[in-house]
Amino acid sequence: MLPVAMLAFLPSRRLLAAFVFLAAVTATGIVGYVVLADMSTVDALYQTVTTLTTVGFREVRPFNTAAKLFTVGLVALGVAAFFFTLTVAIEEALATDYRTRFAQRRMRMEIDRLENHAILCGFGRVGQEVAREFRERGVPFVIIENNPQQVELARSFGYLVVEGDAADERVLNRAGIARARTLLAASDSDAGNTYITLTAKAINPNCYVVARVGYPHNEEKLKLAGADRVLSLYTLGGRRMVLSALQPLAADFMDTLAAGRHGDLVLAEFEVSAGNPLAGRTCSELLANTRNATLLGIRTHDGELVVGPRGDYILSPGDIVIVLAEERDIAAMSSGGVAPTA
Image (cartoon, rainbow, N blue to C red):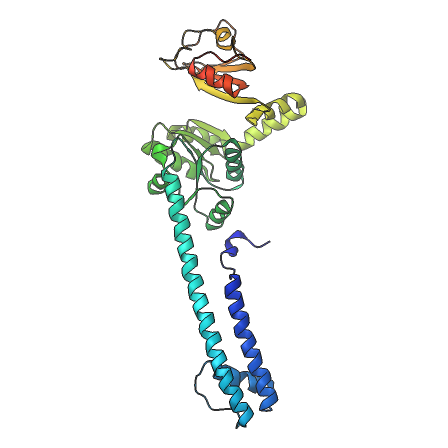
């Protein structure tokens, strides 16, 4: 299979047909001069090329009447083939440029319409998996990538892409950083991710930044740069391997949660705001009228993570509730209303 970047340079069927037509006229001229003027193949090729290009050189050898009439027809046919090929080539070049410009403009318009979207910086192996997960979950996102081959690959998947350095504030602005909900710094460079985080936080301090780190000693630098969450893929991978070896069923359960959806159940989180009716209620009251919901944990307003909270825990403004439930139960709980009963 050809690389994606090379596909744009393949000729269209119309242009390919024009080249075939020109080649057929050339082959006809060679055969004609060999037969009618008794020329060698090289002399016939030379005579054909000089005739088709109308450069005005003398004949290789004197022509008889048949060769002269053949030359007249070859000139007419050759000029038509040459100008037809040239016209098609120019049209294809202009059309390709127009299509490229139109596609880029349409992509910019789509990005400008996004609100509360995610920005993925880097489309390497990690970035490709992140993009796939975003698409499966229906999360709107924009990719920033400076490698032309990776840019073409991302576009081939139909993703919204901004080409450039994610540490450049102009590039981040084109990706809509001021309106973005979250940014994922997933490049292969810890230094690059640090600069990306610094720039993103300077433009939009409310943007939630998740940064990838390759070396553990750089984790603190990313946090100082403003990253809200720093992930080491090697550390996570090591923990996952140990869990799979020692507690395989627990590992399968974690995979189910990480998938975000299992049947009719969806993993979701929502915040208890000051004006939300949930404030002051207990966990038991939260789940009282749900049809199929499980309370997994609560991130309290002071940053503590409570796993499997007690039923008498009272929700406070700033708490973040993590549940596994059906979508209608999630909608009712997050709004502070009563979930509909079956």
